[in-house]
Image (tube, rainbow, N blue to C red; front, side, top):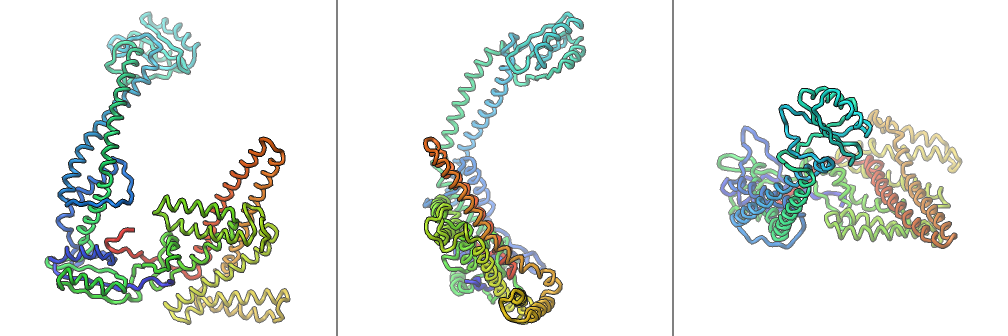
Length: 613
C-alpha cells in the first residue's frame, strides 16, 4: 500500500543450447519483465526458434477461421489434448472445408447483387412493351432511355422529334415519380435528338445489367424472382453449414488460438535477447520477493548452466511498476491504468482514490433511491461483463456510499423521507462550507504526499521550499482573513509575514513558476464547491420531477399514467446525469486538483513475460 512492489534488476546469461528451456520456464514463472536488447557491437539481437514461422502460419489460419465463423472470445474449460502437428492437420482440413463454403457464399452473394440490380432496371422497363434486345447497340439506330421532367415535356417531345426525322419511335411510362421514356431514332439524327432531350431536362438511365437478356421486362422479372429464391435458399444452406461448423469447432479454435499464441510468444522471445553464436543474455526486472524462487527454478531447468546477476533498482533506473494495494482498493488501480503509472520511488495514490472517490461521488448523487438503483444496475452489469469487473466494483462501492449520504440528506428520489442531518435543498450554504473544507483537507493531503515524495528524491530542504511553502501560504491567507473579519484577535502583520515567507520559499523551491501559480491553490480549493453544486442541481431536478408528476396525479384518470411516466422517465434521466456528473467530477477533483500537488507518474507498467492482462 502506497508503495509499489520492490523490484530487482536481473541479467540472465547462458549457453545457447539451454536458451529454449530457460524461455519455457520464464514463460511458466510469469515474473520477468523483459527489457528489449538493442543491437550493438558486442551482441546482436537473438533469432526466433525454428518453430516460430510454422506457429505463426497456423495461428494466422486459426484467427482467420475465428473471424470467418464470427466466434466471440469467451472463457472456457476446453482442454486441448493435441500436439502441434495434430492441430495443424485439423486446422488445414477445417480451413479447406470453410474456404469452399465461404467461396460459394461469396459467389451466391455476388449473383444476388447482380440480380437485384437487374431487377431494379427491369422494374423501370416493365411499363413499356419493348423487347430487351432492342437496347443492344446498332450502327444505324440510336436509343435514349431515362426520365423527363413531367408529362407535358413528354408530349412536347413527341411534337419536336418529327421535325428532325421521321424515323423514330417513342415509348413512355408514368409508373414512377417522373415519366420514363425510351426514344429510338436513326443514327444520323442522334445529336439533334440529344439537344431536344436536354432542353426537356432529360436524365439518362443506362441499363448496364440487362446485357444478354431477351424478351420483355415482365417475363424476365418473373424468371429472376425464381432464380433469386433459389439462390437465397442456397445462401441460407451455406450459412447453416458455417454456423454448424462454428458451433462444433469454436471451443477447439479458441483453445488453439490461446495455445498457439503462447507457443509463438515463447518462440519469438529471443528477439528481445542479446545473442552471440554460442550464448544468450536477457535483461529485465523481477519483484524482489520472487527472486530466490525464480532463480532456483531456472537453475534447475538449465542444470546450473546459467549465470543470474541481480541488484536493487538504482535512483535513475526506469523501473516498471507493479502496484501493491489491499484487495478492497485494488479495483481503483483502474484509474492509474487509465491515467499514468506512478514513478517507482513515488507514492502510489490508488489508496487515496479508494478513500475519497466514493465519498465525492456519494456527496454529489446523495440519494437512497438513486443509490439502491445504481447499486443493483452495476451489480448486474458486473455479472454480465466480468472483464470490466474492476470498473463496476468501483461504481458499486460509490453507489453504496451514495445510499449512506442519501440517509444523511434524508432523500429518496428527491423527497425528504426522514429528518435530514443536512438538508441539501434548504441548507445550501452549510453544504458549500463543508465542500470547501473537504477541498482544503484533500488539497493539503496532496501537498503532504508531495512533501514526502520531494523529501525522498531531493531532500528535506527542497521539500520544505517546494511543498511546505504552499501550506505556509494557506496559513498566511487564513490569518489575514480571520484577522480582517475580527474572528481572531491578532495583528494582520502575522498573516502578512506568513504570506511573505511562503512566497520567498516558493521562489527558492520552484522559481518564478511558483509565483505564477500562486492563485492556483485558491482556485483548486474553490473547485470543490462542485460537490455542493452538482448535488444541488440533482436534487432540484428531482423535486421538479416529483412536483410535475403530483400535478398530473391530482387530475386523476388517465393523467395518473402520465404522472407515472413523468416519474419514471424523469428520474431515469436525472439518475443518468447524476451518475455521469458524479463520476466525471469526482475524477476531475483527483486528476486535476489532487494529483497536481504531488504526482509526476510516467512509469512503465510491469508486464511479465507469459502473463496476460
